[in-house]
Image (cartoon, rainbow, N blue to C red; front, top):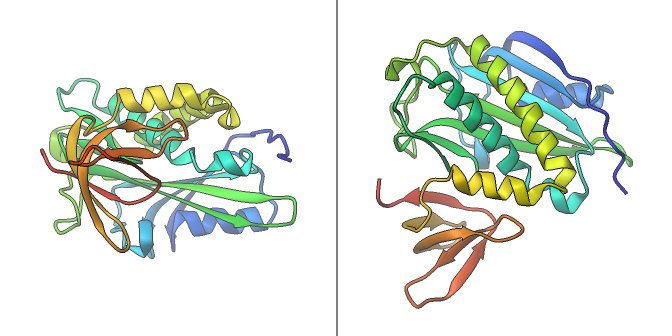
Length: 251
C-alpha cells in the first residue's frame, strides 16, 4: 500500500558536496519529507548511470529532488520518463529564442541537435519499513561539458544561450511540479508516455543498444504501455528493452 505523499516544496542551495543525490538521501534518512530540492555549485563525487563519473565543475546545474513513497512499486520505474520531460521542458524554456532542436534520448538523456546536454540518475533507498525514498538527480551542462565522453556533448552557453544555473533551476522547479502532477503517482502514465514520444529522439530510426552481455541493433518503433523501449530487429521480431545504453545511428 502506498502512503499518499503530501509534497511540500523546499530548496537548499549548497556549495561543494560529494553529490546532490547523496546529500538528498542523507536528508531522507534524517526524516525529510517529499519535495526537497538540493542544488550545489560543484559535486566532488558526481556520478552517472552504472557508476560512471559525471564531471561536476562550477558553472553547471546539479540538482536532486527527494520523493518519499512516490507511487506503487510497479509505477516507480516510470519516473525516469517523468524526470526527462521536466528537464526537457526546462531546457526548452532556456532555448526559447533558439532554433536548436531539443529531444529526449531513451530513457532520460536530453540532446540538443544530437549532443547530450543533460544526464539524469534516479536512486532509491528503503529508509524504513514504511518508506522508500527516491532521489531524482539531474545534471545540465550550462557553461561547460566534457570533451571526452561516451556520447557527443554540448552546453547551453556554447550555443549562445545566456542562462545561469539558478535561472535554469527555476524553470526545472516549475516543470517538475507540472509533470509530477500529470504523472499522478502513475495514474497519468498514458499522458506521460504520449508526451515523451512527442519529444523523443530516434523514433522510427535505426539504433544500437548496449546491454550488459550483448549489443542489439534494430529500429526504435516506440514504447510499450509500461514504457519499455520496443526494438524491431531485421527479422521482424520485436523486443522490449527495460534498460540499456542507446546510440542513435543516424546522428
